[in-house]
Amino acid sequence: MTFSIVARSGPAFGIAVASKFLAVGAMVPAAEAGAGAVATQADANLRYRPQGLALLRTGLQSADVVAGLVATDRQRAHRQLGVVGPEGLGATYTGEECLDWAGGTVGDGYAIQGNILTGPEVIEAMESAWLSSPELAIDRRLVAVLAAGDAAGGDRRGRQSAALYVVSPGAGYGGGSDVACDLRVDDHPDPVGELRRLLDVHELFFGTPDPDTLLDLSGELQEEVQSLVTAHGYASLDIWAGVENLEERLVPGKIDPVVLARLRVGDVRNKA
Image (cartoon, rainbow, N blue to C red):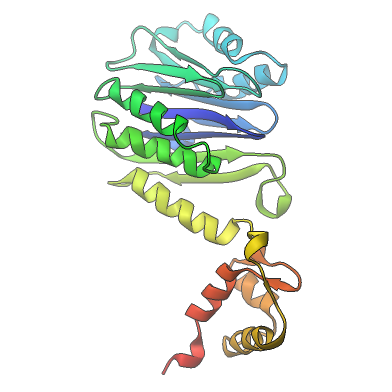
């Protein structure tokens, strides 16, 4: 009922998943910075998530984590599982009673798996997308992999939900957590497309400013910015940015062009 990838990129771990299943993001993914990532699907065993992360914390390799999880599970023939740890190959498992087509593949730092798919071409397209896009940030790369699987046929029953979950040390909002991205599309006719749109919005509000593009907030630009902020009814750029949920893009003495564009687009001085 599901196709997914669990992967590692530098210190980050992530999972992207799509399915003809309501709110698949509530069931499949689990990840912990420094430990690894787990996806449980088919007849999902939600205990695999905390148990898998606990095993990864001990330093076990991905294949040993998978072996440990399924060894005592009497329903393992119906399970599908993907695991990736801090180093080495990912690991995947498909029980012999998972519904066709079902299977997976692994490589250095990734595991891809799916069941009730249109065929093995889904997994092949996902792996090709992962291997051909090392230059992308992990969140973009994972969504590209999901889109490739979807385009290749995906879940043969249709589409309903998708999710993206990424962790990296200190990458959460305000540096207060390790959850860099946690996006879910629970019920939608084009869940992968909608997930990509949500990632664009996430990047707008929570992305890190590119130091090479920052503009000095001085002279005429400073005057323009203050004029725009005042026209919006706020006393300072900080206050306006907080209201607009752009506070993560503020840099003292500088302005992110993304913030400036947003401020100019909403220029109330040009409204009748």
